Image (cartoon, rainbow, N blue to C red; front, side, top):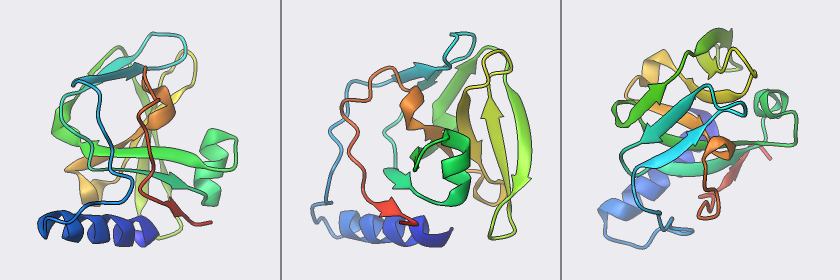
Length: 142
């Protein structure tokens, strides 16, 4: 799980002890909604996200064509998707495969997930309809 694993475990431990979590997210009403640039793919997230983080690794830089990628980790079972998706699988620096889901019409990357963490997936947070509430728990691979 690399660096985000450490951030996630630390935040989870604080929550379990009843302590405040830095940069705690104040969510808008659920479900969260989002979609691709052309509108052919839409999604809803029906449960609160686990963590939002900014990743500066080279893979996130490539997928976002910028200095970082934004990932909102959610439970896989909490996401419903409408529209046709395409996917490709690539290897990561850790040696694990990452499945990357995108709209086949406009090419917008919407999600990525790993088989060894099937219970969760990452929503590319910039694809949410409302991003004003997002506050990252941390920046990794800086």
